[in-house]
Amino acid sequence: MTTELIPHEVVSRIVDGALPIRAWREHLNLTRDEVAKRMGISQPAFAQQETVAKPRKATRKKIAAAFGITADQLEL
Image (tube, rainbow, N blue to C red):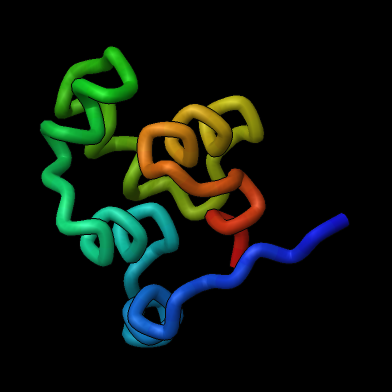
């Protein structure tokens, strides 16, 4: 198993209290609407997922794909 790196900026946001999905979205300079469109869901549906501390594995995979990262990088 290879370990993917998590940028310092993402880790810093999480340390400051952001959940991993939000930290990654902000690091990638994406809006909730942009991510929702990439996932094929509504912006309110994505906004709700962003507040979940531990989303389901399938959801993490979809979000990671929208971000262009691995699902493992969303787990901290």
